[in-house]
Each structure stands twice: as structure tokens, then as C-alpha cells.
Image (cartoon, rainbow, N blue to C red; front, side, top):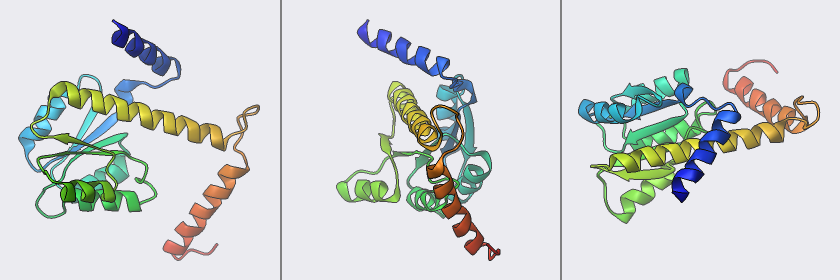
Amino acid sequence: MKGSFRGQIMNNFLSSTGLDLSSVKILVVDDQVMNIQSVNALLSSSYTVLAATNGEDALKIAEEQSPDLILMDVVMPGMSGKDACMQLKANETTESIPVIFITTISGDHEENECWESGGVDFISKPFNPQTLKNRVKVHLELKYQKDMLMKLAYSDGLTGVYNRRYFDDHYLKLIRLSHRNDSPQ
């Protein structure tokens, strides 16, 4: 009873703060279509589920669709999940998207490589459906809280207008972007 009460309070909080879970987008990346279908069957009633069967497509979809969370297989032909995650984290547009690895890998060395590539969690294959749902929900809540903190840190509490911190940070991003695009400043 206690757990359901806490969940009810969190759901009330999320709905009162404007987080519409149906608008949440989750990108599932796996070279096995059957795995994508099973994750889709579990999550599509609550979230919008996007799919990619390789790392290259995942990068394109992440850039274009800006998912809220990525569930990614580690071992895929071509670009591995770890390599795709590193590229996501190196891109300013996609760096803040949490990546949960769904994998069969075992061993400290492989796990450490996943952490170092930027992953935020692991789910072992074959996965428990309830564990998958709970981890997705927890990481979406964490992302939402982080986004809210950033919004509060970048705006004046009284007026809601962007503050100096926002302009300083975004000015630096624009400078880096102009250097990358060889544009005049």
C-alpha cells in the first residue's frame, strides 16, 4: 500500500507540473526486430516508441526526434551500442538524453566500458517486464527533474525571464557552433 501511495503522489506531481507521459518518446535500438517488438508491446501504451535497428540510424533519429530516453543494445553489427552512445554524448543536441543499455554482456570490463561510454543504467536480457517499466519510469522522472532544475537555474524566479547564466552558457555554445560551421561571429 505504501509503494502505491508514493507512486500515486509522484503521478499527481508529474501531471500537475505538466509532464504528459503520452508525449514522452523512447528510442529502442536493437538489431533484433523481435526485441524491439517486445519492448514496444510493453511501453507503447504509455509512451511513444521509436525504433532503430543499428547505431547509425539511432544517431539520426536521436538528432531529428529528440527522444526523452534511449534503450540500446550493446552488441550490434556495424556501430556498437557503446560507440553510438559515445557519439550521442559528444553531440550537444543529444548529450543529455539518458541511455539505458539492454544487454546480454557480462563481466566487469564490458560493464565498465558501457559506463565510460555514457550509459546511465543496464537491463539484462532476457529482461523482466516490470523491471524494464520501472527503470524507464525512474530515468524519465530523473530526466524531468534535471530539466526542471536547469529551467529554474536559467530563469529569474520573479519574472521568468532568462538570466545571465543562460546567456553566458548559450553564448559559449553559439561560439562553438560558429567555429564548427566556419561562420563569422
